[in-house]
Image (cartoon, rainbow, N blue to C red; front, side):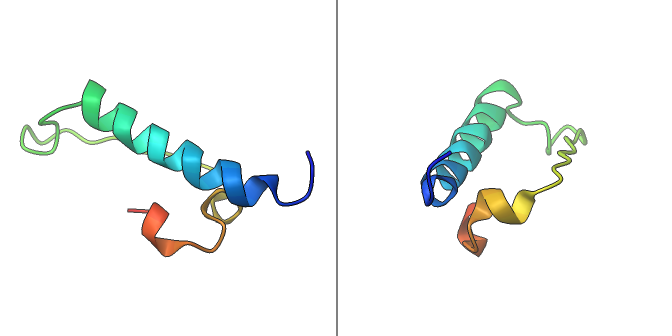
Length: 54
């Protein structure tokens, strides 16, 4: 992957993942359900942007 692509793709992937989870799992928190996501290189995806990890 070309240099700098993780800084572009990582935040885009996290935003897409968050939006998909919200769409597919509406009201889960209210219903007492949860989702756990495990990622080895979360810091790489986040690109030092704490706002993209909620």
